[in-house]
Image (cartoon, rainbow, N blue to C red; front, top):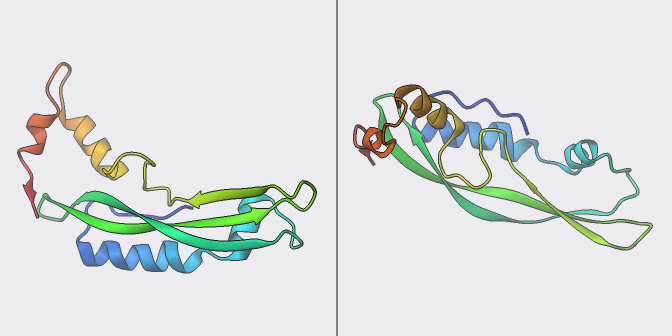
Length: 126
């Protein structure tokens, strides 16, 4: 799902973007369209799971927010097989708790052979 997350945002802004651009746009129609499923396929939103995401605010303070990833289930009418999908927004790297903007920012700051963890000490963590 394409969601525009600013390079730096505060927790309230993240929550607004998460609700307006991610949660409110997930629908049966959206999922069917993205997966190429017909209207005859039974589809069920079957819960969410929690993840943490680390972000930078406007003052370069590092903070984390907890968000939920929507999951869905559909049954293939021909085989009867259940299929599961997790619907991630595009600013989330599935297995990395850093937002993609932060990874890009850090990659531009770290020199060849330099320890990336030294750059984290510049951030205040909230």
